[in-house]
Amino acid sequence: MGHFLPLAEFVKRLSKFHGFSITFIISKWIWTSQQPAVFQRLAFSALDIHFTEIPHITEYEDEQNMKLATRILKFMLKAKPHIENVLQSLCSSAPVSAFITDLFCTELFDVTAKLKMPSYMFVSSSDSFVCFMLHFPKLVSEI
Picture 1 (cartoon, rainbow, N blue to C red):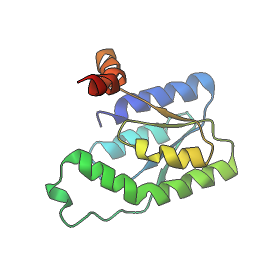
Picture 2 (cartoon, rainbow, N blue to C red; picture 1 turned 45 degrees about the vertical axis):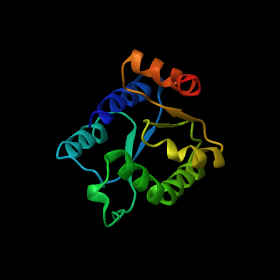
Picture 3 (cartoon, one colour; picture 1 turned 120 degrees about the horizontal axis):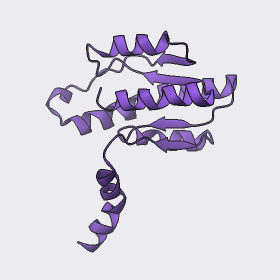
Picture 4 (cartoon, helix red, strand yellow; picture 1 turned 135 degrees about the horizontal axis):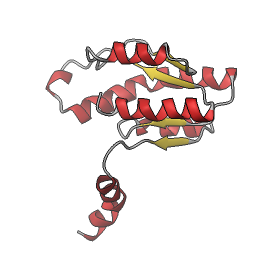
């Protein structure tokens, strides 16, 4: 929820003040008890916000013992074809202005590039963290 709530506030503003239609691509893979209520509030708002759920993705046998970042990467690799299908469907029904994701789903940028869809990473962290992340490649090359 920590990444979703700021993103939800951002897209509410995109819809309310700029007239964008928003579609969230969701999965119940990592589902918290609070998510359905938040999704429902967004869906029943007066804003043009919709949800599309991808099919269930089965976990790897040893996935429960993996670090969360590894689990997310493995999930994204398995979910990529489903998400690509959703994005293709969205593109065929209306022009898509952008694909916005958080830093955990950048694995999808090759899909959006293939579809010629502008892609953006929404970072809900502090400015200092964003600066660090942008400077990190230089630090790695120097140290």
